Length: 264
Image 1 (cartoon, rainbow, N blue to C red):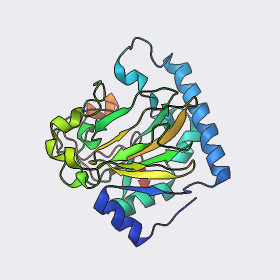
Image 2: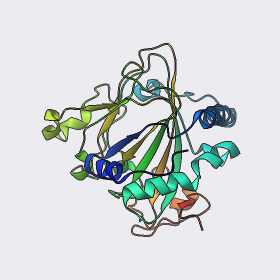
Image 3: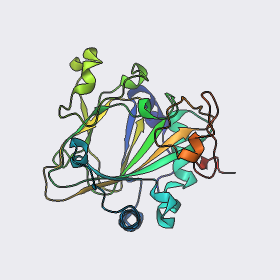
Image 4: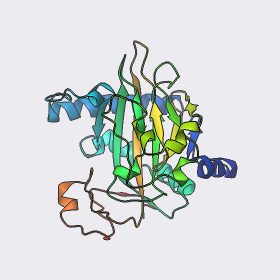
């Protein structure tokens, strides 16, 4: 596993709001991650029944997705709580430590819809321009099967009160709130299987449709800067955690939001 980033990579991330890292995983590790994802998702659906039960909205045809697989899969837990990954995320974000807010399995199936432009951290229970996601490609992510696109630099001027509606049928709904961004040229982030993309929680990003007959699998980790405080929006927080928080409280529940780095 890649464990060090160059100063040039750190500077690129902070300037642009994302960073493509090739060969985060070696071949053996990639197969381990693929097997863990298959086991973790199968276990999740056996517990929670079919993923689309009772849903027929647009976003259901964007991804098959699961959140917090680490809580039911020991194999996933070992992967997403690896302190080496937390160390890389903390170095890019410029923070002393990170907690796992949640993992997020994202499988864009054949003919799946594009993912609308959106800003992640605006939807989270904490607001921080140091929030960061690690998105690990378990298949090649290409222009043809729905790789991500970014509007570089938007992490510095996006707002916490605008998220983007992932269930809209128009991909550019977010740009109604940011008309000045329409002149920005999106950058495609193709990455080979085993590579990854670090994503600032406040950058505008989207993804194309999957125009292939094969799924495009990824496993993401959303890292919360240690010391982040509650903004009053429960979002994906476990109900038992949110119930004990007031606006301005530090979110520091080691059982549900483990400290990944430093981990001592």
